Length: 173
Image 1 (cartoon, helix red, strand yellow):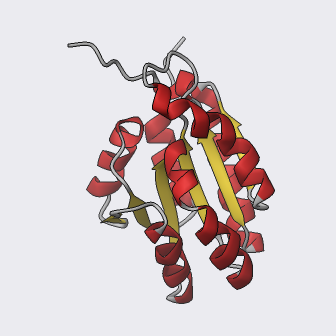
Image 2 (cartoon, rainbow, N blue to C red):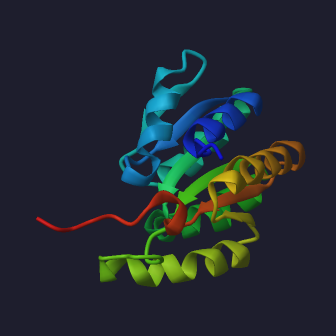
């Protein structure tokens, strides 16, 4: 059995969805996907200082005829609540988010647990359509489904990449 290279599969799914702009707050869980997007001459990476900037970035990209995606951690979802609730709902543009989950499987940082637990419910309460990937073979199909829904229906969609999939961070010396 061959191992599934899920970051490469996610990059391919983004490319096939014609995503050309990727906003990111650097994150170890997205490290390989970030590298692949940076190396892609058809994609432009924008480093964000805060996750909520990405909501405006995605809105502006859509107005300019460009498809965007945001890469963030589950803790970053908490930073975006107002922007998702107001801007994305009122303006009705496609918002595609890939969220690496923290506070789950093997978490070593107790600060990550509360928002990690709350993220699926918060997104659902904000009207965001959510798919979850727990296994490598689930990642690309989840992204393909959410990208299709986001860009065809101009709605907010998120793919939650579980901590079991991305791996728990080690905080040992």
